[in-house]
Every structure is written in structure tokens, then in C-alpha cells.
Image (cartoon, rainbow, N blue to C red; front, top):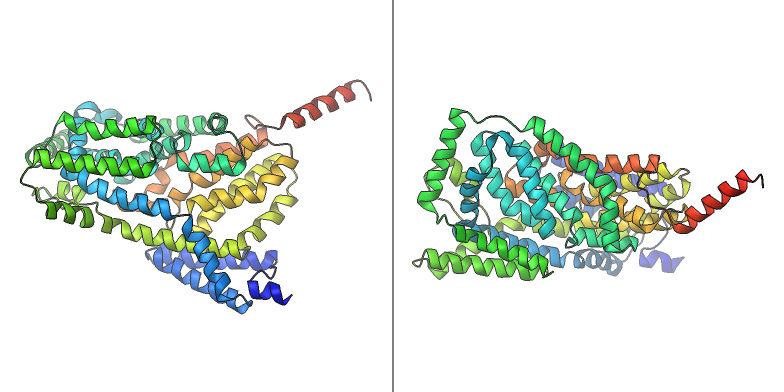
Length: 480
């Protein structure tokens, strides 16, 4: 017994685990929603309380530190990717890549069908690239600028951008989250993506219909004047050229060649810098370095354009990076002391019907997102907790991997203290609670997955389960 206490592994019961999670939810919910705080402080307070609880239970510092390290080390690569995205945004603006996308977009996309077009473009490009963060921080910024210039609700445009980016991230074989869900459930990647379509396609179609009704309308004279003013400002202050498409083409090639995200981003940052020096030979090395570190500062004299294009830089990503570190720390501690596992496993064992099992697994993924705010943990923890129960119920691993995507991956963008939500909100300049009602794809995906669980439509079962059902039906027909 003493050994359990020293290692911090003294068993906790279901009631204690749920109490801890509910206290966490109250603290973070009040801090972010009620008092309007940055998520960082409430999460830090929760970490302090979890450590205090662990010490009261007799955990030693080595065990606590081990939990923190185990949590953070899973996020080292994403953290570095965030820093590169900060550099990419500032370089792409300075080199005229994002401004060129905006100018050409104004000519190619009709204001009458703007919001559904945004959703489709982000979904198509996102599927090719496999990174929602990259879509939001590149073409997403350009499309957002176009939408606000045309007079559309910024929250609606942000919701369409994020929904399309999530669709692409979810359905691409290049996506980290899609590969993670497949790996955790031990399902084959492309079979997993194919099986995702049972919930993904209905969510996509309904989202597109909603964007069609909410985000269409003929452009008025005021909007046209604003567009013309914005285009003139961009032409006067940036290099607007078809060569700006080169980095985007390179990104597609890297995706096709399955080049990892870090290498792809480094290549595009370097290419953007080369293009900047070619277009503006007088640019100094020190100014480029400052821009990469602190972001691009737009000085066109047009207030709306300057507000839109003053962004990027490694320093701009540090608030998100700090939140990643804190949420991973919290997740590592909760896993180390079996808090979430203790709360989920008994629930999985008590479920009687297939529909309730699928619903509980989805709600668990949503719960991890809400309690911890970390996307990867919302896939890992429910995956480990429910895998055995899914198999015992005769459900194939593909059924579990789809549930992990629908309840975990897509929901993080809706949690104000979630890493993905904070990134999207900071990048587009629209708060999570503002765009949440318009992020239709994320809201609908778990709904259609739950319907699949209760109806059985598209729910993949184990071959042995199907055989057993067929045998039982045959015996019943024969009167045996």
C-alpha cells in the first residue's frame, strides 16, 4: 500500500474522479466565459489544484514531474509547427502571396455565393493538404479579408472557413489527427477515411445548405465600392502577381509527395523570403528577421486593410504555444493519476445498447476536449477506454475510429480554451463563442455519428459478429 502511495498510483474511485473533472470545468468555464479571461490562467489554476490534490494523496514530485513530461513530449512537434506557421503568415503577407490571393479571389468568387464558396474551397484545398491550421492561416486569412470587405458577418465567414478546413483535415490521408484516430483504433487508414463518409458526407451536405441560405446575397453598391478600394490599396502596396500561386503549388506538391509538415512549412517560408527579395530587392535582412519574429505590420493607410494584414510572426504564436504546453501538462497529470480513465471505463462497461455505446464514446471525446482542451488527448483517451467494449459488442475498429474523429478531432475548435479554437480565434480575429454557432460541420458531425449508432446505418461490425447474427437467424428460422 505504501508503494502505491509513493508512486501516486493509489486507486481513486469514480466519484472522486468526477468531482475533480467537474471542478475543473467550473473553473475554466467561469474564467473564460463568465469573466472573459484568456484560457491560460484558468488552466494554470486547474494544474495547480491537480498537483495539490496529488500531493495530498501522497504522490511524490518525481511522479508529478513524470506526468508533466509525458504530457508535454507528445506536443513538441505541434509546437514547432505553430512557430513555423507564425513565420509563414508574416512572410506570405510581405511577399504579396496572401494579398494576391485576395485580389484574385475578388475576381473569381461571386459575392452572391460567397460563404458557401468559402466552405467548398477550404474543404477541397484542406483535403489536398491535410492541415486545418495551414488552411486557416493562409487562404483562410485571404478569404476572411474578402468576406469582411464584402460586408458579410465575420463570425459566419470564420465558421465557414473553419468548417471547410476541418472537413479537409478529417478526410485527408495526410492529416495528423486522421492518422492518430486510425492508429489508436488499430484500423487501416484508407478504410477509416472511407468509413468516415457515413457521418462526414451528411454533415458536409447539411452545412453547405445552411451556408447557402445564410451566406448568399447580391453585392450592393457600398460593398462594391469597398471591394474596389481594398483592391486598389492592395495593388498599390503589395506585389500582386500570378507568381504568388507558386508557394501554394509547392504546398500541393509536398502534400502529394507526403512530405512532413515541418519540412513543407520550412520550404514555403524560405520560398516566400526569396520571392520577397526578388520583388523588393531593397528589403534588408534585419527587417525580414524582425518580421519573422514579431509579425508583419501593414502601413497602407487603409484602416481595414491594415487591421487585417498586420499579423503573423513567431511571437504571435506564443500565447497558443503556452496554452498547448499547459493543456498537455494538465492532460499528462490526469492520465498519470488515472482521473479520466477512472471516469470513462465504468461508463463504458455499463452501456447496454450499441447506440448508447457510440453516444457515450462521442460524449467522452467531447468531454476530454472540454475538460482538457487538447485535441490529441480527446482521441487517445476515449480510444483506449472504449476499444475493448466496442470489440466485445461486435463492432469493428473502424466504428471506433470514426467515433473518435466525430467526438474528438472536430470538437476542439468549439471549446474556448481548446488549442485549436484559440489558434483559429487568434488567427482570424473572431472569438470562439462568436463563430461557434456558424461552425456547422463540427456541430453536425457528432449528431450524424450518434444517429448511425442508433440506426446501425454505416456502423461497421466485426465479420464474426455478422456471422454469429446470421447463424442465430438461421437457427431461429429452423426452429432450433
